[in-house]
Length: 461
Image (tube, rainbow, N blue to C red; front, side, top):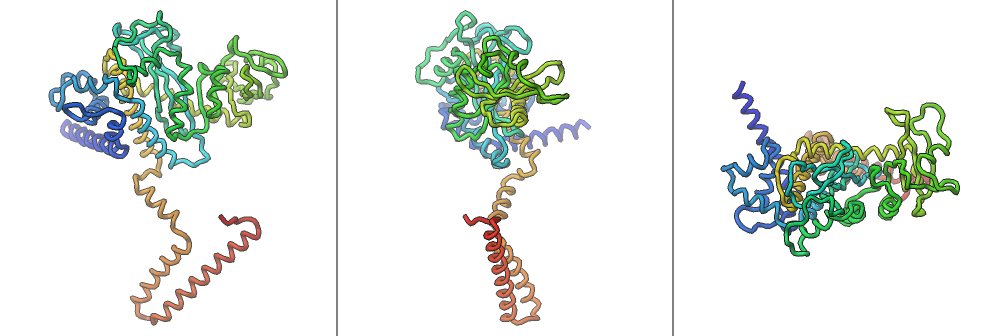
């Protein structure tokens, strides 16, 4: 049994290595590393270093066992650390370039009528046991209701309802100096990516939202809506992001946020008490169009809470959307919660490498997110029956290009070969039969088009 199990494990490891190599080749990981300024200085190539770090959780290793104490590797630990800690490596450009390719591939598998969305959320990056990590700060964890040492990982993702992909992230420290345990330690050129990302880390997180959306849209990411949690539901943010895409987000009853309804400024709770509710046990209790302090029209949908005698509110800057559609589209935001859980529990985001350098943490986080992107591609190829590699696209393209006349020609050519091989009919008789059949088919198609055009069912391009 042990021999059989070990053989199966070796075969599974080979298949996994093959799938990862195929992923790296299909999306040109080596080329994109080079274009992002992640180039070879000495020793092994960046792609080799990237591949070894990428494989760690799939092999059941962490950074220490898989790289630091592993004597079978063609490089030393310093090479891996230098890959992650170099402030000139543009990890953001690299990840965006990969995700745009994957998102465009997923878009081919979904119809144009299906909504693609951008999703904002943040999660804690826990480094509670650390003391000297660069830009370490006290951050508030909404899940536990306590403060901890670490970072806030502000993330922008893309989803089509079936797959989720991380587009961009910022490891936020704190804009308040008194909450930072450590400040910037490195002396860096202000033109480097590392210096710019450190400035982002000590800036208020809500100021990054618009820039993150603009970067994604500029690279060709297709989306129809922006989804956010209630932490971002402020009139200024809704107005700013609403200039790019319609926004749908959860709203809380906050005492300093007012909405104009029938000429009066009221809080969300007061608004709910003023409007008429649907009778019975309807899941959607009510909806109303109001105005924010930024003079922006928004639609608020009140939904029955599943576990409490209470309500939830969802705000949409696209007021023409039906209430049911607003609730349905907002449901796609749940994918980012699953994403955070995968990063922390299965892909070793917080526990794999105890890096103290801020650039190193950014580089390692990028590689962890690349693991999730790889798993998202694998899951889509496994679950979606239309993804039979390149064969699906080749066959579907051939079927689209094949017209009815061409199909008839191929069928009759096959008949002609059969008749010729039988030797029963003369050649001129067979050709006359083919001409007669094709002529009748063409005449039938033309007459059908004329009939449909006269009845308004067919329009010429």
